[in-house]
Image (cartoon, rainbow, N blue to C red; front, top):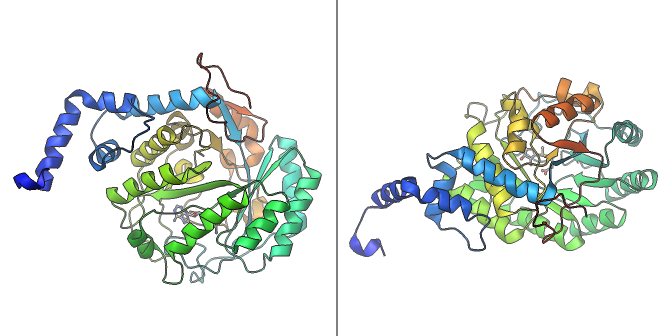
Length: 380
Ligand code: SAM
């Protein structure tokens, strides 16, 4: 319509922003979650517009309380290997980083992390690692089935990257409940700027679909402020999430690592990351959304602010203390003190001070439609 009047695009945008600032912004936030897809201009304004973000965060918090009350689920993160055959340009454990120190946990080390975690109240164990060829189909199958045998009341989440469909099926049959595979960016052009040629966007997406089909609670996600990211890419992320409907969404700021090609790139901001957390909560009201370690790394109150913007999960580090620093995806990663799983009491107090409570629970997704009209906590 505007094209026919020959009005420049930036003027349309300015006018639109002015119009939104003039009052209907509140209506737009109040209309979320919405059944309709928002227009590009609406998304753009929500993501980068200069408006009262607290209103957005409050709405996201209200929606999360409708489905999850004040519950915060904790996941014990076990970083099982820092070997990786991939070469993601942003990641500190990429194969080309010759300075990265590499380790791999043995089965027994993983089981002892679970034992300690169970004692501390964790009912989900997340096995995450670089794409390590040592992790054969059978090895992972055995580790998963042993954990499930020992802790039948616990969920096992895997985050081991792109694998054959058959691997995903076998591990699911062995008892793995969830799989985290961030899509990283929903724009193919942007994806190609962050990864080498052999790592394709099409394959990442195929893996995500295979995971869903195999029956996993599937998690995807993206970094905020990654190099070359434009607002249009974040809009593509929102549209992808809307369509794919993952059970979990990991959103963290990009943080540069000194031994990667992106060492000199600026990191993602706290404000933009919180905005995306809130928008994801409003787009997928029942999603499990962690207040990520990366968010807690860039700001001392990152975790609490993430919870207040709609996140409902935290993933403290259960890896053996000796290897935590070696799983170095980005600079200054927090991995001791309050971040550590041993400090679950401290974490609980921190979460409580933010107005929520850590619960001893597997923390499965709320079923859609289980929100109660009186806003009471839904129990599944
Ligand atoms: N190999 C598995 C995979 O590819 O999904 C799991 C491990 S991978 C290191 C986990 C996540 O770390 C990635 O999906 C990416 O989003 C995040 N990550 C890597 N480097 C990062 C950086 N520099 N800043 C923030 N997040 C980063």
